[in-house]
Image (cartoon, rainbow, N blue to C red; front, top):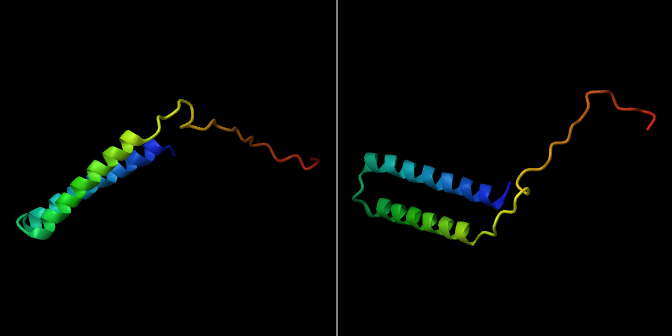
Length: 80
């Protein structure tokens, strides 16, 4: 996995966390200090991921995927 793959996965997780918080808000209400604090923390996470993405080294072409290695179905040569 490349750095960009990891950052994308983190972004997806933060997005999912935001959706979960939205569902929680509909159940408990958004007027409480605790839910506002969690919302603010998620906003900080979003900003931090954006900063990480901006400071990540540029991805070099050809380094993300490794070449496929063909493994034959023939039995192993025991004379080796």
